[in-house]
Each structure stands twice: as C-alpha cells, then as structure tokens.
Amino acid sequence: ALTAYAHTDRGLGFKREVDFWSSVAPVVWDYWWNSFSSSPKVKLQALLNEDTSSMDEDRAAEKKKELVQELHERNAPRIYQVMLDLGGLYIKLGQVLSVTALPIPEQYREYFRTFQSNVPGSSDFETVVKPTLEKELGAPLEELFETVNEVPCGAASIGQAHRATLKGTKEEVVVKVQYPNARWQVPADIECVG
Image (cartoon, rainbow, N blue to C red):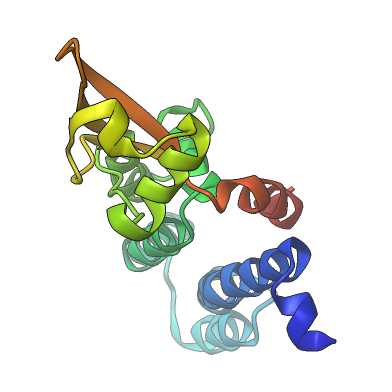
C-alpha cells in the first residue's frame, strides 16, 4: 500500500515536501543557531562577552550585521540550488522574489535573478517532450513539422519551448510544452509552501 501511495500525485507531492524541508531545515537551523537570541550558542556567547568585553552597542550591532551577511552569503546558494532542483513553483517563487519590493537580502536576489533568464530545460526530448507534444497535437511530430530543435530555446518554471518548422508552409514557429509533472507538482508545492 505504501509503494502504491508513493506513486500517486499525493505521494509524489509528499516526497517533494520532504525534499524541500530536508534541504531548507539546515538553512533555518544555521540562521537560528548562529544569530537568534534564543539560540544556546548566542546565549553562551552573550554570557561570555558580558564578562570580558566592553564592546559598545554600535560595535555589537556591526558584528551582528556582519554575521547576518555571512549567513546570507553561505545560505543563498543553498536555497537557490534547492529551488533549481525542485523546479516548478519554486523557480516561479525565485523569479518573483528577485523583483519584489519585499526586503529580500541582496545575496538572495542575485541568485534569484538568474531565474529570470537562465532556467535550464529539464525534460529529455525523446522520452518526455516528443511524446507529450504528440499526445497534445494528436499526431506524430514528423507529420506536422519539418524540423523540431531538440534543444530548448527557452525554459520556464513549468515548461520549455522548442523552435520548429511547419511542414508544408515552412513557417518557423516556437512550440511550447508544459512539463508533464506540472499537473501535480504545482498543487503539491502550493500545499507545501502555502
């Protein structure tokens, strides 16, 4: 029964949720352990510094700011990689966060900006793209197109695009294909982060 569940949309969504949280939890831990006043490490450091340091408040604030910048530098690439690996809605979230008015640290924005134009195509042409297009268009690609470039000319959060030449008219077109997993991934991701 567990094996059967694992291959359902809900089971696959649960696996993505586990993948997400197992990757993000260490980042959350890193920020908490190193910078939150409720962390035992921070409490111990404060206790030790209380006795040995005459650091003024300005210097303490500067040290805290430096620490937070280090945390951003260390963790922005990790979060970027998680979003890239999971794709779908996470890439869309990165695109939105790269341009939002929300106070997103610059280290994160730099990584998320790459989602605006550098999303790699993620589906194999022969095993995923071609069968998906043939199913949607109702005919073999060879009957509809002179050529279809197997290398995507563009990719986004839930699909990718391929240049093609129509049979007969020789008109150059771009064919967009939605990733087959987007049907269940988007609702599962919304449930995870929503």
